[in-house]
Image 1 (cartoon, rainbow, N blue to C red):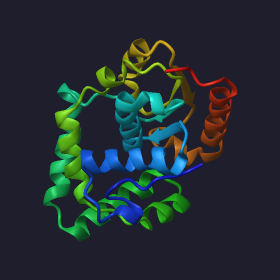
Image 2: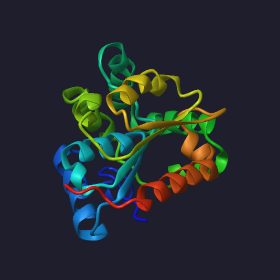
Image 3: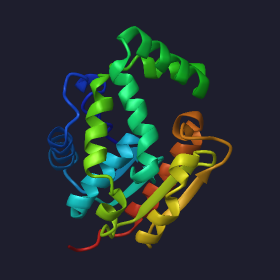
Image 4: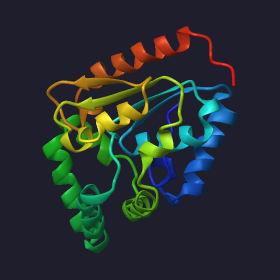
Length: 214
């Protein structure tokens, strides 16, 4: 199993989050590090990255597990995100840090707050992802031609991202949905053991069959 820091995060906090940098990271990881078609697991922003990669290089994957990313940022769904991005651009660093700490404290167990806050993060990611999302807000159309196994995982109370899950399932007839009960968008962290078990179960199914010929 290989985990990646996305541009603007962790060891790559100094790297701008651009389409070119993200694509190069994914391509290098799959072709030069993994060396064979992997099951790609993506959560939240990582889920959108995984979808975009699979839409253009589906033959280099075995399947997708996508958590908390069944949403197209269009119409009314864009505005809350756009407003929050604008807010982060205007706040001083100290104020933004305080706001993010308060948000994490309200939504995550204390042990996860410490973990997340210990990871380097470039605040420029907010505006950089905003631009990418705004210019290509039809993830559902991009991924519609993907033919490999797909599992969507959402928290029961992740109402924003659950609002579009039926549309994603309709466009990907081979896809399945798992709901983690009693939790919101933070499901993979709040229910880490349950989420890991879901990943393990799906991976065993994906790799139990021979890869389709292309």
